[in-house]
Length: 253
Ligand code: FPP
Image (cartoon, rainbow, N blue to C red):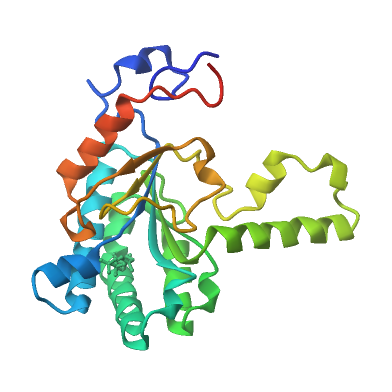
């Protein structure tokens, strides 16, 4: 079926945006970059930049829910972020604890389902327990899914998927020649999520930094100079509007 501008199969969706503030974006992911530079520009400690970054997370998650986004995936801690100074890693983990603790009730009330992608079981035991509890408490929510990437790296995600498929082959469950794209997609952490429509990166860097490499195959990319702590509703609206003007061809003409 011919795709409309915003990638939807709905023939009326070409007019999305008039009534749909997301312009047809079901799944948006964000590489939240620039906390450190935000703090530096204001002559503040880096830790304050991250603290402001969490406020921006809270605001943008609420905004996305109000706008009708189905899934928002946020790159909170990459598998490479462990190489930052110990104090900064510990600050980020502290902020993560606080965020889950303080916002879980709001997720429950607003119908937000929490999901985590990445090998989060390698985090401190108390955080893992907190996350598991939040996932369980919000499992039935269906207004929006907030997928937080923790100890996530796309190459690591693909490696884990390959190992999983290889195990199934080893057990005689799967014929190597019969492995299809769906088998790979279903072995990734994002298996239950809709396709990624839009990938945003803040702070002017033009890289994907090992984020959702498989899922971004046909996503629209949007780069903004705004630093993450400054990324607000108006910035998200600009990104959605830009998406609304893209012609998505998915490899076709
Ligand atoms: C980039 O800033 C940001 C990160 C390290 C990840 C994002 C983390 C947060 C927004 C806070 C924690 C998140 C949650 C969900 C509780 P940077 O330090 O790389 O900035 P810089 O490139 O300007 O130094």
